Length: 182
Image (cartoon, rainbow, N blue to C red; front, side, top):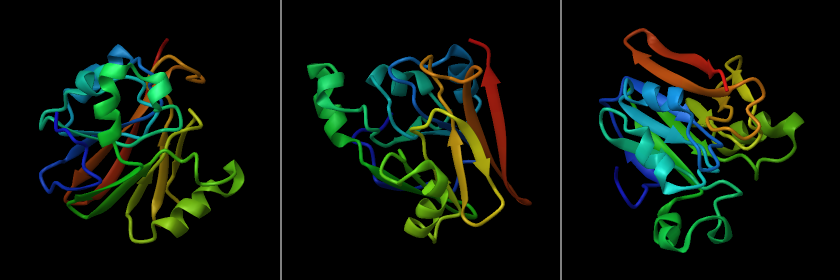
């Protein structure tokens, strides 16, 4: 794990990127196991505790994370405040074939217009990742793609903990969805 968390990162090696959000201090064991089969991990906020980041353990040991609206000093232990201070609000990851942008999404407006607002804010991205709603969603009909991995912990999973995997291959980018029973 790299600290502090970078707001801008480059990784041409990653071919499988785990995408999670809204763990609120608890990572589902199925998501943690899936992370070990991925090259990198991206957390879209409401992390809840540094133990979640440590549990992600992707192969290349790189995790990009952003702050969520619940990632505040009042909700994290005092021993973790220095780590909390190093986590950006928004991060960009340069990957083979394009840019992945991640932010929590709570500042992107109402649900009905959130994807449009995110696309306007990050028009040069190939993929925009956000969290906040705890609802799994893959909007791949327009560019850039906008996805929400849902909740990868135990809080408000709406049918079980979920996450996404971005698979990068010669023939393009592909999104895989995963849902785990509670």
